[in-house]
Length: 460
Ligand code: GDP
Image 1 (cartoon, helix red, strand yellow):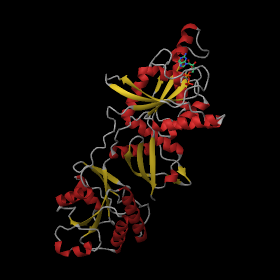
Image 2 (cartoon, rainbow, N blue to C red):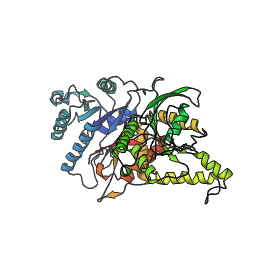
Image 3 (cartoon, protein in one colour):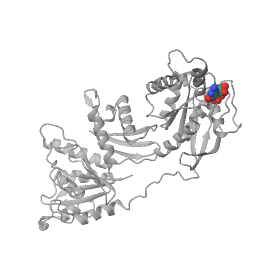
Image 4 (tube, rainbow, N blue to C red):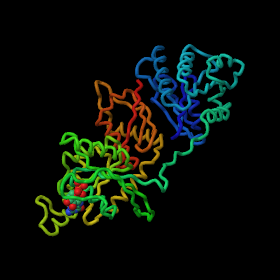
């Protein structure tokens, strides 16, 4: 993941100039005047592989800027920097010298134990006037003297930042070497065809299929190979489950334990196949089971099994009342899935038959594709742009007179996707709006089927 460098300092020390200088931007965003700001401004610095943030606008609300408000805002900014940054650039004004607010900020920074680079700005023509001893006394290490305005010592500052950040971390390459199999499992109500699908995949009779509900054998895992669309061989590990039963429908302790085991197998999987019955439609129990997979933040492919029965009905038995054709039935089924399983993250939907083998390859190809998607790295700049766009298109609802507001977001993990969101107050994010943001990101970054974790950090 990209590193984050955050600029802090009291107003008018030249944070914005410095930001533009490092970003090599000519247009200066003059937002160092209190009140004329956006919360957080960012840019990607390619040479050093880091994201640079200027927090100068954070914490200022409309109205008069009083000295007390300035202090509050600075504290908010420094707090934000401590939470987000790998390195903090603390800018002080070399012309004016230290103020009480500078000392206060320095104290917060020292306490945080974060990496800090002290930058004495406005050092161009006034070398003599700057009391470096004073800067040393802040206890934040050796200061770098620069002129953001004229560019003096720019190279020194860039180098100092890179030295402090350390070497660019190796891309944490996905641990998906050829030997590591893709773990999948089938979950679903009894009798939807989980064992039959397993058998179809394994082409063996090692798993028991039965007409009696609930007789699937307990958790076993089996390896097999699959030749993907691209011709490569993909190793899979199928983790069989005893079939999750909705918590409210548990009949006996035996069922209780078999349910636990099924949830364990969800934890081990890379991709979950949620199996539905083509003739039954989406039931309440299907919904509950889907919920379990979503709770675990597992990517889901929705499988509608027994499609041979639907085909046969339309071809031989005069169809199903209320549906014009197989295609009509399929379209309505699809619609019902998206309505009832609205909380799944844009999962692919595949109609298959364990009996005839129809579209079984497609099902596995979907898993291969989803498994690749799980390693996507999202650019911080793009992520923030999308969040800004989503918030503009549909603003968050006011909760208790206040709206949820995002300052800055960054991806912190894959498998599952983790997005850290710095916001005003985490409790203002409603479940519905969370889902809106998630599905917006899923759409935008092509993460279909992959749920997203949001880690919220509130800072008002
Ligand atoms: P599980 O409880 O989910 O593991 O379901 P099973 O695999 O035991 O299947 C339940 C019943 O549905 C069995 O009688 C299977 O033969 C039948 N079945 C499973 N898949 C299909 C299919 O694709 N088409 C048809 N027609 N029947 C199926």
